[in-house]
Image (cartoon, rainbow, N blue to C red; front, side):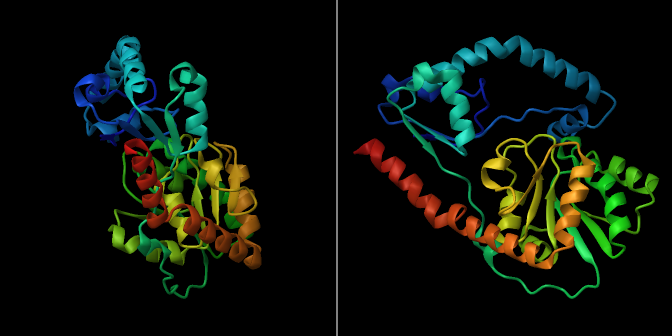
Length: 312
């Protein structure tokens, strides 16, 4: 039996695991993700679907409820971990976190790290559209924690260096109006383009047309957009949060910067735009890493071996 639903740190549980004597089957949890570390009322509005005047009150009410229920949920979390025969993590960092927190109950269990994959179409080399400017790309839900406000601020510096540059922001979300307002305040309307939702089958072409992909998040696990950009052979500039640094190798497949630093983002992006050979080499290494680590077939084989060990 395999629990594949989101498994929250200190809160995730499954009643089937806690009744091991009834199920009489090996129980697997995973992939367990590294926990998010940033929350904000605008993010709550998006994830909850509540955008009315009660959003703030509901946000604080839910936060208080989570605090009150944290201890009983953590106890259920421990019970689930104790009963599971195997725990699979999406990163070494998530595994180490659980070893530190629950090392006393993980002994004797099968512990594996299996990353997440990318659809094969992102590995297909798409023909690039000819353009007379550099294109910087970021993709995702437009939440405050995605840090795109810092990337827009960085554009002021980048534009001073390169007049022929554009930032393309793909996605929707509750923070979009704030980002558009900031763009206007900084007089960057000519250099920042907002695109609404794009069908998934069109994303490979969008990645192929950019020169640099940027993920300026304040908090993350390991966003799919980074994996997709790497599979498309694009160099990545990202903040070193969550487990991003485990997969984006600084100076090799991309560049890592501290969160909330528009100056650091601008500097790394300018370095890449200034050096065509560096962009190409970094993009090629990113693609090779993605082929070796985010390949569906390889990850399916890893899961198969995990299941096989449990039933031998």
